[in-house]
Image (cartoon, rainbow, N blue to C red; front, top):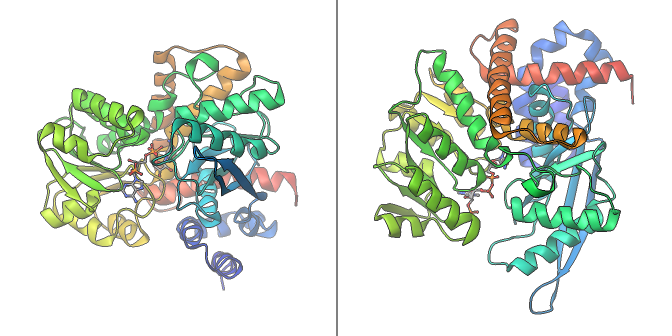
Length: 451
Ligand code: NDP
């Protein structure tokens, strides 16, 4: 059995219930096969076996009191996966679906993504099965404080620097940072995605969405194309989706879909900047449902369907697809339907939004397919820029950060293409992203010896 297959089998056997983690490991490992012959030293020093095992995983109780005075208990996680090239770094997710397998899949992906940005950041992820939906502001605050009451022991600006993810935005980062500052009595860059008034970076909220569109634009440019007048399908309506829409509008494309976990809205006239501002207010301030968009703008709304099912069932024409909601939202049938409906480019704003079947179909077709660990790396890259500004105790302008983000995304794109070509898979962004991300981390691990 090859070393790659042996590692995959062991991962499955050790944690048979961690389905999403297996999926992420298989997707990366299968593309690393050629590195085992080119780098026998990696095999000898057990890099492949070691990279799939987190440095440590902390699971903790998060007790808090709701508005009625009832005690609630959630489970908290922080998986510190790999710090070979820099301090652990990765977001925190609050969603009822969170479990150890989900956090491990996200932390594993983060290793390669962070490496691709060229910044010194290791991979980690954290979260809780807490459901922020329907909770009051005070409940959110008490939960965030309870979460940080344990997390503070494990993080620090040179140790592990968490950020936001699903269910964790500016409000939650504020509450967690405020509590960390209180109990540690220090004002330091322990979280990214902070408010501008207390150490945040301009463009961080925009970075993942903007970066995904920059990456897609780079992919399109390899075929002499751009966003102008293209029909764009975006899924989700949270942080990543909102700023992806804003950037697509700036580049002249027309976004025609958006969704949340209840419904999909199709707006053939396009979600212009005024409508995009409405979505930001609806989602970030009123915490409303996307159906309200359909009521306000009198557009079609498909209850219970996600964007990709809606496109498939209704034969909607799409040029570019930007999945920006959650893992495994786009399956093989959806991928086939997208291609049939004219889609030429898929850039993943979300982490692992395409199932293995969908990825296979995209890679075997003529579609430009940018996997999340490359296409959405702009978020963590700008978190890295926030860390730089915090340690230098200064703030860069909006233009400066945006320009650096654009340069980083261009560089990530080129790195993927170069690595793919060097390993005989010209144009394959999946292979390119995985190998380029892996090599740097593997070399660092090798240099340290067996630790
Ligand atoms: P948000 O919580 O801001 O938004 C998530 C959006 O996705 C919401 O609109 C949510 O709807 C929707 N959604 C969640 N689950 C489903 C589902 N099962 N079906 C349909 N819609 C769903 O999160 P983000 O925008 O920050 O994150 C989105 C994705 O991007 C995630 O995969 C995340 O890991 C990834 N990502 C985020 C980064 C960041 O900087 N924030 C960085 C890199 C990747 P609802 O409100 O109903 O739950």
